[in-house]
Length: 306
Image (spheres, helix red, strand yellow):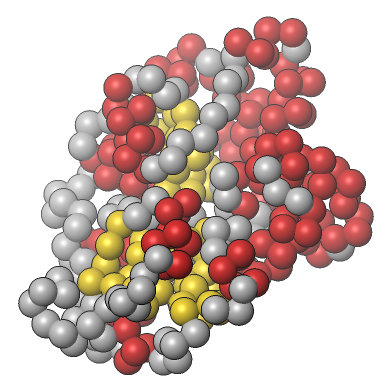
């Protein structure tokens, strides 16, 4: 679990209260260790809805998965963490950078950073001056960096709180937060199977409304942390497995924002991601079509009630 999911932790009790007695069979939440598992779950129909990276969601939609995006769940919120021997971007040469997934905003941000520094991005075997980008589940990144005796890993990028323990050991530090590379960039999105739009439309509308209420509460909390500390503490422990100190530190150091107005689907922003991943990065198929991908009416209705 990452700080990205805090919005869901606060929304669920509210949803259960408003929905009523049949909610236990209506929503079952669980975490997965990798985004590949999320891919398979959505593609097979074993998962009906998910919080997932927007780039990954766009790729699955283009590949034929019948999913739709209802809202962003946050903006920004990742950190680039480096071992203490990495002092500048040129120190990345001949080393690797760990990202959560090939189709991820973190991959795009790392690519933009390395390209801006005029660093070659290829396999390590081809050039000692190039930088290798490797996909690794967030939970495994700290373990890999700690066991990197040859110091081949220059950095890893992931959402908070992954990497916090390493930074606390003073062997690592935050090089950048992701909003330094793109202010209020998209992060994960709430996506659902399209059949739910027909069979569970009212429930989805209620969930989006609760998520938006949760975002407003988190937005206020980050402006005044003392205001809702007890509630944040209990939810962090039960849902994320984090202490209140860990949650507060993650919110403070990640640059994440839950501003409600920024959570509405924005096709212009999606096209920025799509165009970059399609052309400079060449990882997204050239003919990617997002027609019908976003369903903004759910959050538009909720925002109009604020």
